[in-house]
Image (cartoon, rainbow, N blue to C red; front, side, top):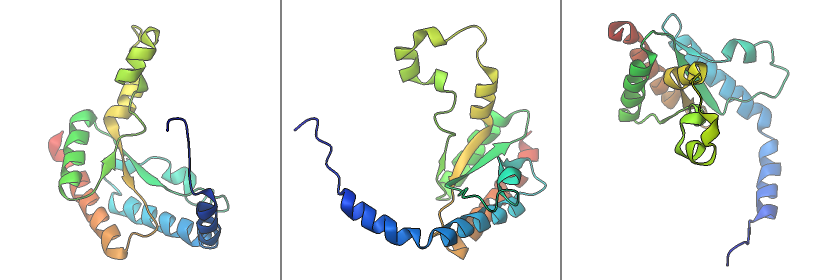
Length: 164
């Protein structure tokens, strides 16, 4: 019936307590994956957002990479982003947009908040939407999967200058 929210909370809590014992290992593995991706795209027009702020300086804090936010630094980033996302997806590497992209361009925002649209157009939000995407960063990725991700990111990043 409608209105009930039934979840196996005790089971989730028990599993969570066991997983907490491995938290430091999980975070370290995710950081290692990010460093490998950072090295794979070094010197290209593809970069990881926040990597310098979250690797090294904050090692004692609990930041964990759930995903790797990637930014394209090119004048035609929107077209290049489309190419990169399509290529990665065709190779079995799932991508996601940053949150919803420019929230003001979402149909629900237009429906429920019609007064949010104005003549300014919010170009920075559009620029972020046009130039960024996310790839996953799970601690259970094995060495071959991380290498596959790095190799494919390196290939698409190397092609950016050809697409400009």
